[in-house]
Every structure is written in structure tokens, then in C-alpha cells.
Image (cartoon, rainbow, N blue to C red; front, side, top):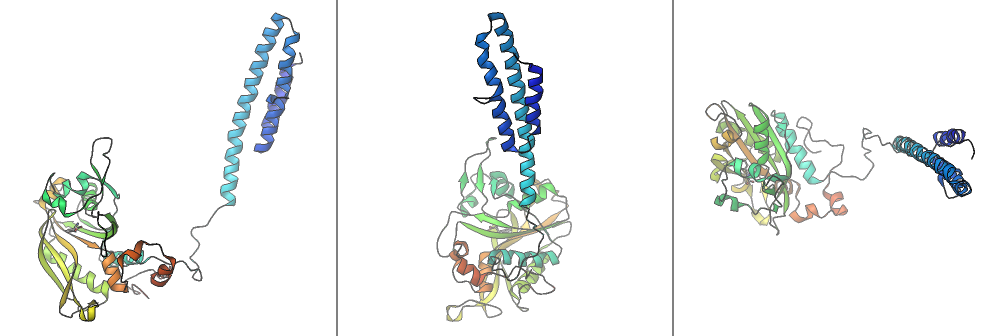
Length: 358
Ligand code: PHE
């Protein structure tokens, strides 16, 4: 039998010298393949006497294992190098500016969210987020909907399988659970808006099972309903670009606010067309109120020291009103012609100082 130590150096040397994956495979086949060097030697074992065969068999098996291990190691190195090379070659520079001549458009929902956030950012609100899949505690219980409370039936909830720890899971029916997440994780003073998707089992001319809301929350020691009113009046006038737009606060009920109100803005419905402005008629746009003490306490905030206001507003309806989009369902049909018609140019970023839309 030939000198196995020299053969080992040669075969492993070839494996380690392989510069890419095809070369490595060649080195592997030359050593371990059906006609490879080690396989050839295995075939000669039959010519040896019993004792020599046993020893040579053991040595050849050890050599085989050593070469196989070297191939595996080299494979990891070369595969990693391949990936690095591909990543370098396929690099996309995401910081390149948008090219205005390209036909891409910003969806009216994204545009409307950007405009709303721009207005609230100017007033000093930060943006907060929460998950679409919520547990019962954040979506209902901490918001002062006890289990079995009839107010839960106000919303047609999509339920999901329970979490491993037994928690009941839902698609959030409103953005209000972000109030809870914010108050649990931050200390007052708090001033946030939370735009996002929400879900209710509802589908007709004016409802889609997925829609968007923007939530607002302010918590501080002296926050009162006058702040809520001033904030919403400023917002609505800026968003609809009507300086004398009247707002009407109507008493209402939500489990998580007390007192609660629904807010209408002035409009006219003459000729079957809704026009926003001081025209004598009213259109509801949002729900709001002072954060219920039970909600503050559920989040570990001392309700004898702090108070807050909150509001929640749909996004589709104001978008339709502002941009004259007649049919809610078209928002989510992914029709490119629709997007080209109603969409916004990516470079026109909404900004209160330079104009929300050009
Ligand atoms: N979450 C309520 C809804 O979806 C709106 C709301 C938010 C009301 C915050 C009061 C305060 O109808």
C-alpha cells in the first residue's frame, strides 16, 4: 500500500487549494468519488492478508473521514465567499434619490397618513406603533372593556387562534391598543399619534374589512378637554385647508374615555356631493374623549396625578373627501390605472411649512 501520509497531504492540500465550489467538487470526486484515489485503494484491500487488511482498512477509513471533513470545512468557507461576492455584485443603493421621471406613485392612504403626521408633528407629537395582531388585553381589557362587556359587540372582531400562553388574539379593531402600549412603556408627559391598519368583519359600499386609523394620545398633569378641542380644530382646519371650518363636539360613549365625544365637521350635501366647509350641514369624522382613569391605572399611571385626552380617526374617509375619491373599495384593488390617477408624486413630501400637497 502506498504512503498514506503523503496521500493525505496531497488530497487535503487539493481540497484546501480549491478556489470555488466547482473546483472543490472536483477535488472531492478525485479523492472520494467512485473512481477516486481512496476508493481505488479500498478496492485493493482484498489482496491483503487478514491482519494487514484490518489495519489498512482502518487507516483508509480514517483518511476518508479526514478528507470528507476538509471538504465540508472548505465548502462553508467558499459558500460564504460566494454569498459575499453576490451581495457585493447585487448591491442596491437605497439612498439614491427617487427619479421624478419614473412612474411610481404614492398611494393616497400613505399620502394622507404623511399629511396627518406632518400636522401633528408640527404640534409636537411623536409617532408610535403597535402590532396588527393584538392580544385581548391590549385591544379590549386594558381599554376598560371587561370580558363579556356589551361594548365589545360594537366592533365585529376577527379572532385568531390563542397564543401559547392562552392569551386570546385578535386583529386589532382600532389603533387604541397603541395608547396602552405607549402608556405601559413611557412615562408622562406623553404626546403621540399612531397611524396604522385596523380590522373589522364588515364589507359593503362604505366598509372594508381592513382600513386605517390614526390614534392620538396626550397625557400630562394639566391636560384638559380644551386642549383636546384646540388640537382637533387646528388639525381639521390644516388638513382640509379650510380656515373657518367649524367643528361640533357631540356627547358619545367609549369605554376608554370619560367624557367621550364624537366630532363633526361642517359640510354641505347640496346636489348629492359632499363639500367640506362652513355650509350648515355636519359630517362625523372621529371619536375622542378624556382618558378613563381605569385605563391610566391599568397602565400603571397614577390617575390622581395625571390626566389625558385621546382621539381616533379613520383615514380612508378624510382621504376620499379631500381628494374626491368616490369609492372606498378602490383603495385596495391594486389597480395601477387608479393609482396613476389618484396617486402622488414621491418627491412631494407633505410638510406644513411648504404645503401639504402641491
Ligand atoms: N377607538 C375608537 C374607535 O375605533 C375611537 C376613539 C379613539 C375614541 C380614542 C375615543 C378615543 O371607534
